[in-house]
Length: 91
Image (cartoon, rainbow, N blue to C red; front, side):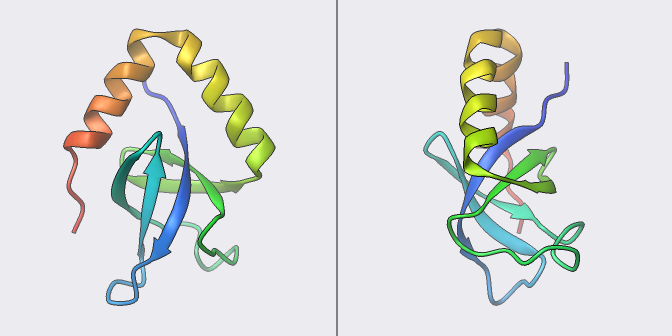
């Protein structure tokens, strides 16, 4: 199963305009924001929906929190996705 996971932008990476540092349940990774950065303005504190290292859309905090609550109830699929995120390295 493939999931989109909400993550909070903690920093925009100035040296790579298509990358942002994003936190997902304490796991911080660089995520490619190139698919949405020209459509929406992004700032630290914004939430994005992430799939395979790419931000697919900007979402509000309430939607992010509700999604995270639901995802923790999914079990293994969510745990597998978090493991994949933790082991990824986008540079």
